[in-house]
Image 1: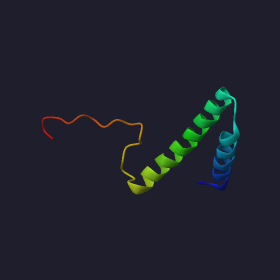
Image 2: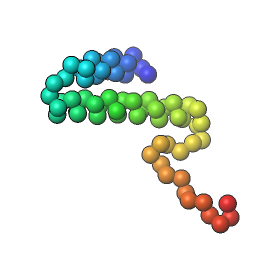
Image 3: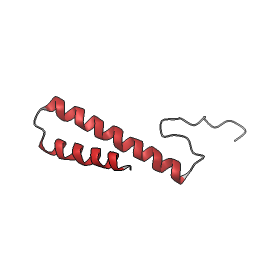
Image 4: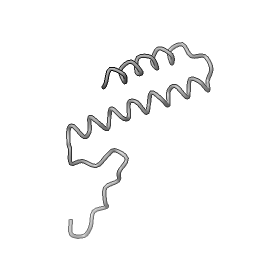
Length: 65
């Protein structure tokens, strides 16, 4: 994570921990999920550069497989 992403992660976690408004809480959690998903995708690509992104679906097996 970049220093900016790390600060955003820390800030979101602090805000989520004390948030009392359900709508604001949900919005903050969605922001956190997006940040973590971006990191997850970067880690996946580092581990297997030829792999498909997490959102891509592989082709179904064929009779030749």
